[in-house]
Image 1 (cartoon, rainbow, N blue to C red):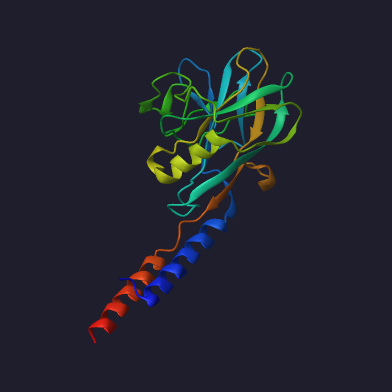
Image 2: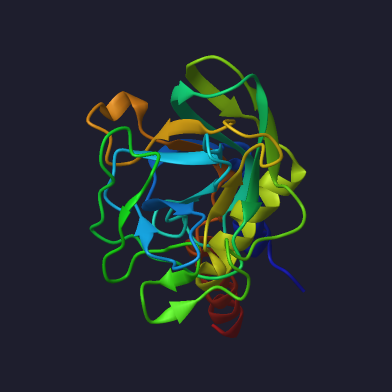
Length: 250
């Protein structure tokens, strides 16, 4: 039979759990790495340390795909429930008209080396050790299964972008599912591949990277989450139950 004191501890525990789950936390974190895949038969181009990344096509029709990742597990407590997610990117240059920009989960890990592209960075620069390229996940020792990167067939989020400025990909069920999975299984967190209009020449959109000189223009992921209840709650109940049993024996 549960004593009145144990019942009291249980009530306290329920109150603590309810409080934890109704008081969500909101954080914004910067990217942990980013890069651009420049279509190149030799897989020799990258921009791991550049100030920008690209999605779409060049004037010559060459495809550009961006890579972007965030270290979710170091920012959100283990066991938390992800409620909503949004991504803010600053587009600093554009070719062509408005285009849909999609985020798709990457299916392999990839690297960010020391490469820096020249000029506006749209043409890429010589890949360095550990860079992701059109052919390589890590230059020049490991490869994508498919040139141009391996990514989910299902977009996590999409948004039409037009003129230069900041854009926010709003929360949705798939976006939330990505981040929840990466929190629960950090070893599967390879970030997103960012795709633009690849059917039209000169459609590339240029976004500012984590290395951009202006911190306000760097990628920002905002996460609303409910933290896991404190484990001390169970301890309170056990202590109450043990104390009650001891008193009965006396």
